[in-house]
Image (tube, rainbow, N blue to C red; front, side):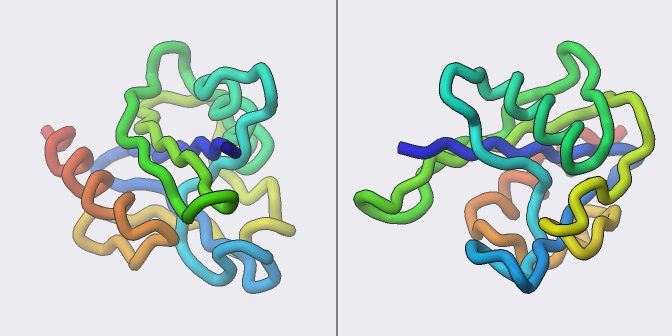
Length: 134
């Protein structure tokens, strides 16, 4: 079963989302967390580190990722295992380093979150953001 990992960069009560290009074959024209496929032999955190570097140009801090949720998407042969992580520390300024994948990146407060590509992700993300607020 293919595996996907995504990361929610959270800072000052806001989360960074990417808007998937309308040209994407899967989940086009929707807001999502940055991330991608886990390569064979790669751990979730290694894949998360690689994907955030490739898509946003940031290096996540060691130990700064906290697991948010995991669920399966799709059915039968088309099923994909999806995992999301909260990331509170990184080096670099997030930028759209993958313009062929995303046509926009933007910070959102939990009360401003648009509908996300995966219905199960939104409630988990909002809950985590509310709980992490000072």
